[in-house]
Length: 152
Ligand code: CA2
Image 1 (spheres, rainbow, N blue to C red):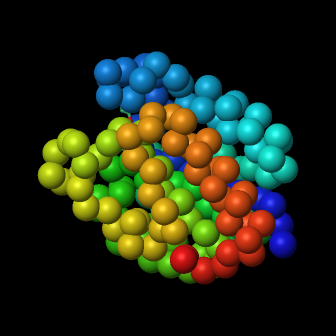
Image 2 (image 1 turned 60 degrees about the vertical axis):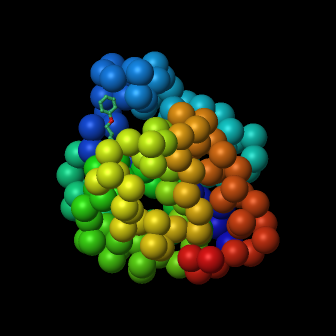
């Protein structure tokens, strides 16, 4: 089984560390990517790390991941709450999917409380700041070692 994991980021996360630090912290997305790469190297995962403001691009990466990757970490950002298309794409992915939110979405506006993605995710991390990405990678590594397939 491959040790390749995709880390996908949705709209506006390119602004991480540049706006609204009281909600999302001071780290940039480049910092998050560097931290993910350092951890991945340590725990023996290969990584593809992407961000897009376009729904179709995220869907295309999920399709690509279907062919090559064993696990997926996704922060769909606002698409979390709106996108049946991303949910449908994720439903075609056979390995573990972990959903990450930097902020605690449950402490925020009611429209952030519902996630389409959670219905297919093996687990959800919210409110742990950017550390959530690292926790998700550690969990994926464990799930791959346990031979987890499917969405369970
Ligand atoms: O907490 C999260 O990670 C979110 O997925 C972030 C999304 C939001 O729509 C979700 O409800 C929760 C927003 C991402 C926007 O990222 C920015 C980062 C810095 C400055 C402005 C936006």
